[in-house]
Each structure stands twice: as structure tokens, then as C-alpha cells.
Length: 235
Image 1 (cartoon, one colour):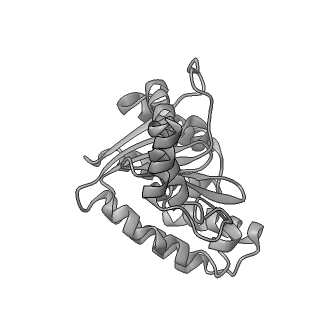
Image 2 (image 1 turned 45 degrees about the horizontal axis):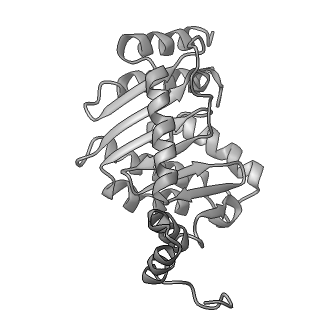
């Protein structure tokens, strides 16, 4: 262990924390030790064979998660995307990262995993910045279809969709896109990598940030008004 050949066991970490008088840090250190290999993974590694397998890899996580908390500041969340919007986005990702082009198959996989919105015992608290409604991913027709889809998604009993308006006085600055799955893990999407967070203290920080954004968002009729206004500006 001293030479870095053998990783510490959970019991080793608890014993060390007890000796140091820092028992409260044991849970975070155990989580960090368990996830050291998978916490920061570059997209080029995840997508080296294309995008389809990556879409499919999320299915077990989605199926076992009961409470989803999703915050997006740049694009429509994957679970809420239309095929046309997903095609435009994944095509750009494929071109930018120069990965094998399996966009058509990846879109099918992305649409298939979205069935969790309507099946099973799941709850979705989803927040988007108003900018997400305005950034054009695809042409006006694609965006109109996507924004219309958001309006229909809002009627699903398992989904709460909030929009953080441009005009709100912010108490929480716009953040990178992240998702919290139950209270077990959070995933953060960076330009170059996916970061998986399992340390309880870090998950708590993302939960706190999400809670702050919840207070800034509008829902129901007010959120619908922002979406319909974005549709009207497409021309």
C-alpha cells in the first residue's frame, strides 16, 4: 500500500481516519478510492468507437435511479431531446471529436433510453437555463419541434421542468451541465471529459447548487410562456 501497488481497503481508510481523529472524512475518502479509476474519463476514450455504445451504457443507471435531478445550461437534456435535435447535436459532437460516425444508431439508442420518462417508478426534476431555449441546435424547424416537445413533456406526471429566466436576479451563477442520480452519484459534463462524483460531500454541493437553481426557476404557465416566446422568435 505504501508503494502504491495495493489500494487501501474500506477498513484501512476507516482505521486511518480514526487514528487521525477525522472519522467524518472516511465516507468521502472511501468513495474517492473506489472511483479513482472512473471519476474522470475523457470523452475520446468513451466515444472512441462512436456514440451508440455510450448512449446504451446509461440504461442500467437510468433504470435503477428513482430520483433524477438534471441541470442544463447549454443544450436540451438528452432525455428530453427529439430525434431531429439529437441528430443535429450528436452530428456536431462526432465532427468535433472526430469519432466514428454512428449518429443514426446513437439517436435511436438515445430515444430508446428516454422511455424511463414514461415507464417505471422514476421522478424527474429538470432545470434548464433560458439560453437553452434560444441556442439553435439545428435549423428553425428542428428548434420549433424541440421546443414544442418540451411543452408536451411538461404534462407528464413524473416530470417537473423549470426554466431559469434571463431576467431573474441570480443568487446562483450558471454552472456546467450536471445530473444527480438519487443520492448515489453526480455526473458533470466538461468539454473534454465526463466527471463522476461519488463522494457524499461533493454530491451534497451539487444538490445544494441544484436547490438554489430550483428557487430561481419558473414553472407551469410561466415556463410555458418562455418556451412559446422562444418558438415565436424562430421566424
